[in-house]
Amino acid sequence: MKGIDEQRAGLLSGIGAYGLWGLVPLFWPLLKPAGAIEILAHRMAWSLAVVAIALLALRRWSWIGELIRQPRKLGLISVAAATITVNWGLYIWSVNNGHVVEASLGYFINPLVTIAMGVLLLGERLRPVQWVAVGTGFAAVLVLAIGYGRPPWISLVLAFSFATYGLMKKKVNMSGLESLTAETAVQFLPALGYLLWLGARGESTFVSGGAGHAALLASTGLVTAVPLVLFGAAAIRVPLSTLGLLQYLAPVFQFALGIVYFHEAMPPERWAGFALVWLALTLLTWDAFRTARRSSIQVREARQAAQRQASRPNPPADEPTPHAQI
Image (cartoon, rainbow, N blue to C red):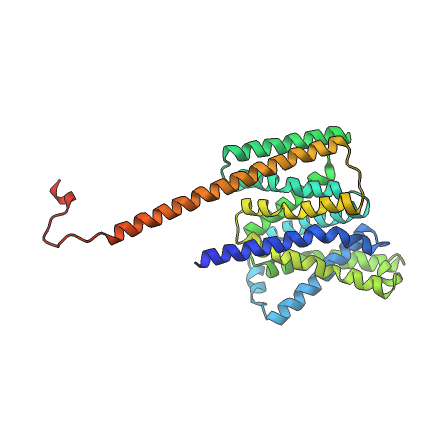
């Protein structure tokens, strides 16, 4: 029962995380005229402040000493911090430079990359339909590369960086709040150093943009911390394949915003590439539901067999069993 409750909590956490990430393109344009790197630095610095306050309120500090004595975990956290920094920075730049649709493609591809990493790095086995889905996703990237006249590098970097981040979170196996605190602690000094350098040059919009702009930049901590804590809670409770399914939510919202709100162009070749990606995701979803149904039937049949076995009367002590007669 505890395992079921854990999976349910992980599922709800994942839905919350990806729902918030799907709407975040509406937020980054509000931070202009700050550039992508300045926004990123504020995001890294203020995120640590937010999670530190949360830890102070919850009085959860004992894990820090244990973590310091585990160099391997520290290394994994550093890799996670580096990959999510790349992801954050590129995504902010993409949204504020008119590439919301291409950024959303990265998160559509991400489930396929996540599944591939599960096979290559965790020894997970793919079913035939999953292989077809991964192959279809690869074909989609080729179609889009031909249509763009270049590889969709924004999409690919976002997909691979976030998939790597998810893998590191899986290996670290810490709760969402603690792992995010450790990651933002790694990010904090470089971010603070950049912001101080920017201020010394007189180029900081935090100082020159007024109180409202400064408040928006400070709120990047909340915008960052809340979905990442939810994602961290999901990553240690559900399989990578389930995370892959949940990841559909964010790019669906982002794609819709790119078309409807930001009015980005969708030429035929881009529609063709997205159609192949959606086909791959449809195959994955169908296969996941089919597998879950089969597993449920097998569990039910095993439970019924155990109940029938338990209900059979035991033979008298002086009566030989059929095995003894043989």
